Length: 140
Image (tube, rainbow, N blue to C red; front, side, top):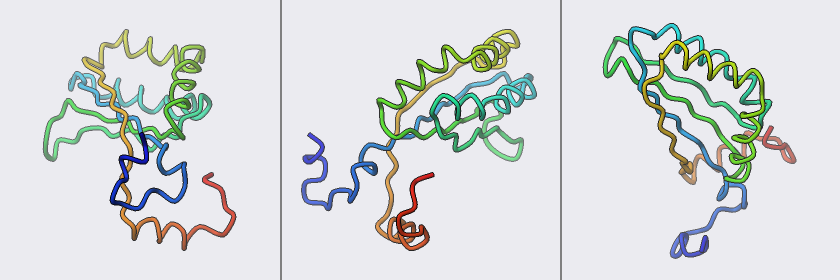
């Protein structure tokens, strides 16, 4: 039960804070096909938005440090049900289907792993957001 998770702690002030999720998609890419993956990532913002997701961004590797075959996408959803609706909508979106087909054809993606995450905000971060956001403003 959700209340048990917050035993001994103050529960979130709003139900949305409890339910909001971020889907992390970790890609292992063919480093020699970096440009193909970059094109794939650049084609996603509109289908993601149209199907109900809030794209935080695609992140590509650099040659400065770390693995050069790792990429990441972060997409926010109001809750798990919204993510499930999004997944169904993507299957029917012609631009999304074409983008997946292009990536499959180029073989730029070797492995794609998804994780569903919940953001942890500090008390100060929540207070700052409240101060900055005009009274009555929505979550945009």
